[in-house]
Image (cartoon, rainbow, N blue to C red; front, side, top):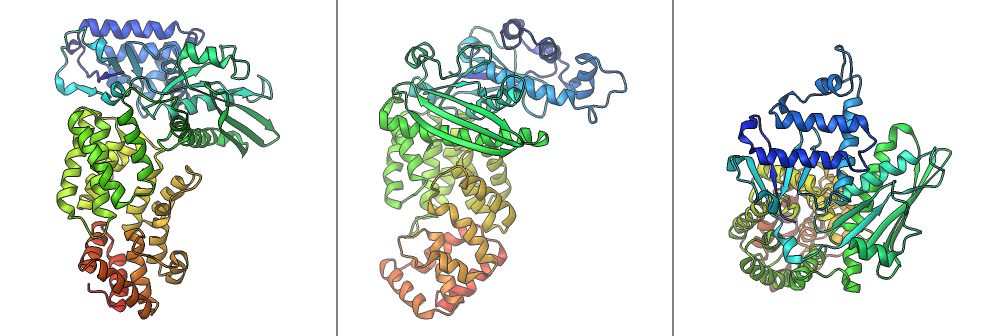
Length: 551
């Protein structure tokens, strides 16, 4: 579903009347939906911010004015002390997301209230937009062309049922509804999936549904549902994902949390984030199940399978695997010029060759090309998290640290559950000496995979090395071979020198130099491409010199 996002700026005369009319019609469509029908204040809130934005008054949409105009607060209302506007805005965002995940899935206009602001943004389907003569300058129209969705045909569908409250409607039912909203919010960030939300007013809960009929009616391959039970201060949440084709449970998880009113939102976000990553992330159970069962294949099977191979490869990259897959994505990106993800993956594969392989592949040219391909991917689809991850990596290794950080934040904002991005970001922070931040992101990445690959642990090893816990690092590495990741080789050679194992260092370097006559220089350049801080660099160099390494 290609769309165009219209950022509506101050002057209403710059907006074509027909577009304004389309937005107003969409507003009424939402107000009449069962999600909003009986919510007088919520409808008033939404109507107010939409009308004010269309009238060019978006700069007046502050917590204070909304408190007065929507919630009838007195003139001395303090939005910092009374959080009703912020709380209601959060609920409005969730309700809009649920609406667009269900009955509003095919609506021509999407009304979005971004976090951190009260002024809405309006997104129009491209086919709807073509019906209107645009009077908005090109600079105010941000195209969001998800062309790969067209290539893939219909996306795998997941229906999310409202979680059942086993304590009854008067107990923790509000928690179950809120948790459902958080899960939907987390899932919709994985844009290759189609999310269908089922709401409390619908009588089925997932247990009494005719799966075959439901799957046919809503074109979904999976149903996600669950239960909430509270006993004293213990809250138990059960999450299940069922295949509508076979009826089997393809994912189940039970969360036991200590219940307290002040932690409700944190608990909801934690469970939602974990569930979304396990279920929907590129290497999550949906893709694994679909690949086994062939039930989620898209029209362009070759593109789909190539992307799945990339997600497998980046968990455990090898030089030969990267080179082979790069050839495929060079062809895919050239033959499908508007395929954003192909350009993003082509960018990342070029980066892999610069950072993970020995003998070393000349880096600067490939990194410059990676930046070019990443920019192209982002231009095609400004919401492609893969594109911004590639730009983060390429700019980091090129030494453009300020730009790299901006790209990292953009990628994480678009997909906070991408465990590879989290781990890579942890690794760059470790090399920069930001130990606390590195460990935080490493932990976040580890929690999203049952069996994290070896390279996910590297940031922790770099931190331990910088803390001069050399014996601890050596005990973990045990014995590094020339097939080990380059990062492990960097630390291994230095540790052998720092711990006085000159014989071991000599044997390792002799074998390495026999296979690659330029080993010393290649290892040095790959180490430097990771932008190590001064302390780490001098510590590694000290160990290398003691080991007989030519620095």
